[in-house]
Image (cartoon, rainbow, N blue to C red; front, side, top):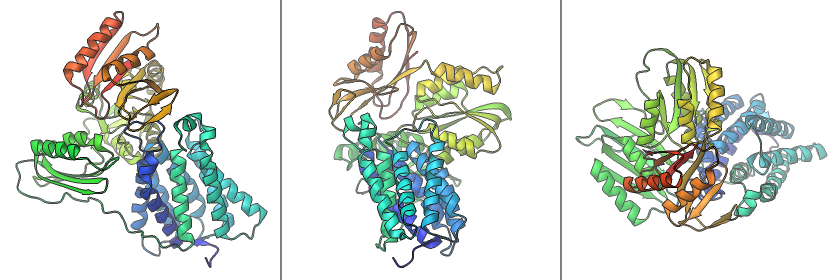
Length: 541
């Protein structure tokens, strides 16, 4: 490369190439998930975070200055951040942009300062940083860049970037030695792998490699407006873990035909683009979720009014009368949605482990609540950081994020609310109450692996607990019973079972009866959850 600096146009191209490189490898990164559950979505979350920034950059003029490019990169990724890996990536970009935005061109010294700021910002965003993660890989890149520059201030940009990327990749390969759970599963850290893809893609463009930076085609409107008796036209894309098999395709077609008309299904590799007229877009989204992550949801009111459906967020148009306190919660499944509504939730964001809502999804939900103080219940450990980031971006409300890691914890937190208490008193009470809630989620394994001294084969049933896998078996009911046994202690008083969309009500009742027989001193509740992917969500308190 003839130049030894990076201007705004080159910086933009480098980031776009990095995002494209990440997108190309997202399925492989998803497969690096330690737990073999059907929702390992690090690659998807990081890609959607990066693509949110890509959309902002693509809206800029070709001659936009560095300050505008940096703002688009930072703001786009912050608002589009999904999952812990996506939020950390957005913080890395935020720190980087804080430095480069003040310069028309960036030299090697400024690049080193920018990456130092990126790492500092990302580490501050995580309450308990762990080594062997994306943070470690980011720090390795920054430290190597600084070392190379200090040893030779005249080093070329190409040599500095090359040495830093290669060193960061070496550290990525060592992450299994830093986190035993990675070593046992035989994988490197997925977030770190995603960051390497971005850095490599950016470096390739700097070195002059030609990369197709054309945008991925996205659904902006449902395909057609044929005459129909249904109220809505729904369009979406779903990315399956593997190619959609004939059985899944046939069942989906039959289901869509049952609840809608004017159906269109197009396949491109693992991506399935769907359009359908229906009276209940939410039912379609819930049915499709087990196939894979959903993107580009668009709903048109066929009676003439355009409606934006942001990743399935169910937001009331009428904010209702002003009140002191309101509640935002994340959930998926008709039964669980009804439970949260009955408990007083103002806005329910459709999402969870399979479809993590973005920071902007949470922020928009907060703005919909006509209250001075808004409690947010993420109900998933992979959504807590995005919710916390939304809190930082909200300037006109007192936002309290209660770090609920599961649906049962979210339900317990809402039940614990005392209207007479101050928001701070309720926050403390909710945190105390959710600490006593233990959760197991019953699902199936998507691949063979060995983890936590358990041999797991594809198709096995797993009970995934708060901190690891509780039980593995061949039968759903027995694995559920084994998982409950692992959660029980002398203080256990209440067992609550929420059965999913793929679980027969009679089977759920039979399980509840066996639990009552085995634990006669405990109260046992059975509820229809309607959640996809997970046969049961079970809590013990």
